[in-house]
Image 1 (spheres, protein in one colour):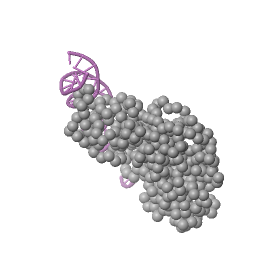
Image 2: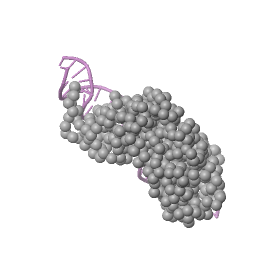
Image 3: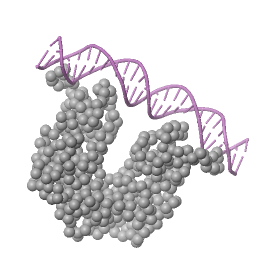
Image 4: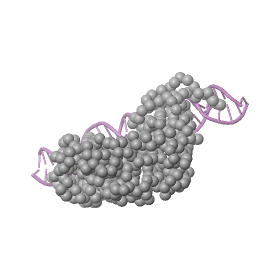
Length: 226
Length: 226
DNA sequence: CCAAAAGTGTTACAAGTACACCCATGA
DNA sequence: TCATGGGTGTACTTGTAACACTTTTGG
């Protein structure tokens, strides 16, 4: 975030911005807020805010996200720090950007907290409105990092409910990577990794029932998925 | 960097630290400075300093490095931002860490600039003294990133002189990766990538002369080396 | 002639990719 | 019975890893 009055002392200010991603309707979405005040009033931006003294960066990111969107306590990873002097017309703000992932957006309907933002909404990454500050670049960098990490970690677990079918897992990969994957090769690879646990139950739907799986470990691990 | 008097206003301060690497005597070395003042006086640390208002992070890193060690204008890449409140006893300093690479340390004999540091020296990454702040963690993270990037970029060019033999290139990879590589496979892979340009000349030495090569492009590129 | 580094190919194995058919279900 | 997604195996290609001998030079 950004958008503070210029500092009284001549030093850069430290802030955090958080790019929260989820998959909705087979499409990668990012959480945006509509700014109520400042030079970018009316524009959309990433949620964020100033880092307090004696507060860690991770804590600041978690706090701002919870306070402003109601999303509690999710996986957060530092992405990059943006510090060009011109990125915020209100003053020199150095912003540490975070990437966060959340399972299907329905579970935590995001809501504005405080009066800083007029609205909070999921927006498809492919069709973003004009964003405030340099947040378009932040989102682009974050989505790229997400795609890269998906290929060599088990991060997918943060985007799915506890139980899911292999079809749902594949849909999720396809949504984020933006390309189709061969079903047979995908199942072979994923099952050979041993990350999943077959639950022995099925999900019934309009067609042939699908076997349900769960991640064996629901914490970040480095592996080789694709 | 760090080691400033506590700020008057209650806000975190922004600094940069730079981990400059080179390969000396077939071993990965990092550039350290000996602190003259502050709670860590006498300890070794990474060079760095405070970011000025209206200065970009990259510019601050380049400026501090040049001012304090005499090393001008080299490849710099942002690594990670460290912001734990306890990392500097003098106050809350958020430090943006950079990785830099330089060809054989002999070319720019580093020298202290100003009175901030008592000495500047290359130290082998495997045998570091106790470092100030959290700089041991910074160096570890930086070396890991360096190893990872070596495998999928042509970054090696920043660590070698313009002309080199395949043996020298291989030595450099072995020094950074910390393991031996098969000479035949290494040459096959590297030559197949087409990154190199055979100069048609040889370097004469105590043994059989070796063909000289140069990088076709001396700018960062993403490829797949190993 | 000796020591030391340069230079070169083949084979075995693992991993990745492409590809087509049958199955189970609800509507 | 049909439309739809679930489920499976094989052949081919590609990349990786292991491995030994000959060449050229300076001393």
